[in-house]
Image 1: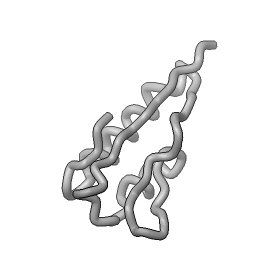
Image 2: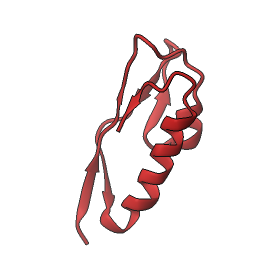
Image 3: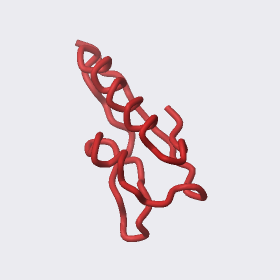
Length: 71
């Protein structure tokens, strides 16, 4: 099965470190010492897992109080 690469960007000037995105998608986000949510490196997922992952990413983006994630 083919792998798909997923990358997310975060507007660090806006991020307040509420960590909602990290709670919903810990495989894609981490909160670092500066308190900001950092996307992890590009993640490769199986094509069959992509729909589920995108759904969770969209949920994480929509629950961000500042709407600062780009998918």
